[in-house]
Image: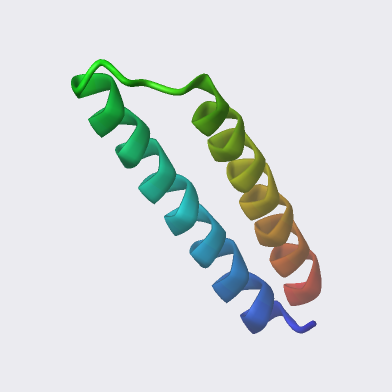
Length: 60
């Protein structure tokens, strides 16, 4: 995997985390919030950060 593809993957994972967070906020607004979605957001954010760090490492 080169730096460009790692950067794209990082952005996609961050977008997925944002979508899950917004969906959980919508469920919270409906009083049906699920804590399991917060764990999914955390996982996708961590994967996004790892992909971004890998991208930085490849650019050096």
